[in-house]
Picture 1 (cartoon, rainbow, N blue to C red):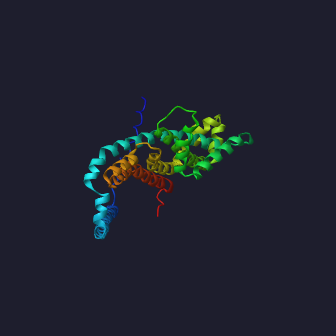
Picture 2 (cartoon, rainbow, N blue to C red; picture 1 turned 60 degrees about the vertical axis):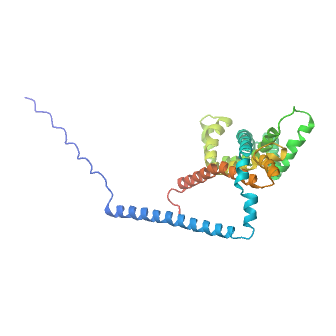
Picture 3 (cartoon, rainbow, N blue to C red; picture 1 turned 45 degrees about the vertical axis):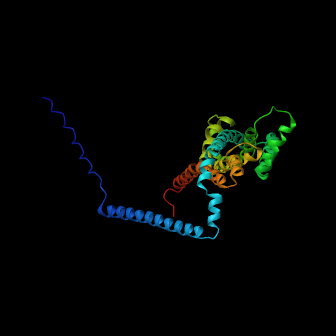
Length: 296
């Protein structure tokens, strides 16, 4: 007679469910009260500061004249259709210029990071390009491109917003390429060596390994450049393009009132505000990720 098989060992008892201690709960409640108190104090101080500034400005002797000249509601309402139509042109130019800047800036940064004496002419040309267009004011580039290139009679007649877009791409691609180059050079050389060790060529290692890490490092700086370009898009008005600034100028000439300029400025602020807040959020998230709780 065979002995019965041994019984399986008893299943381990389930671990008790974790729950915070009373001390931890007290700490959480304290942090929540401190956070609410900080928010309330910030709101209160902001309201008081805004009230003091408003009282000071309204109490100045020339406030009535300034209000009628720059903040006339009737003029603002009448100028709204033309200015908002001009802003739509600014948005279209911004979208096209952003794509052009991304392409040209990436090419320039890639050329400037080439190694070897064979590529010296390309590196020299890319360095000269970035030096020239970073040093030259955008307004002068607009004049040279908008009035100089059409004067060569090499191209068919193009609208002024086209040449304004070209000037923006030429100028901002120089800034963006330097930011990208800094990001590429900040990637540790071991990453490039590892990619080459896996059999990837220069272009593949740059596209698949180096550029993604470089973009993560310089994203806040790139977004700051984008915010600057959102503002400078309004300079295409000097070429005669009827954008928001030019439309405000036309309305100002008709009403002898500067309120349309204020309207155009507020619309540009509203256009840039989401990007500014997004830049702050990305910067804060990157700082938290890099410092991992060591923020003082």
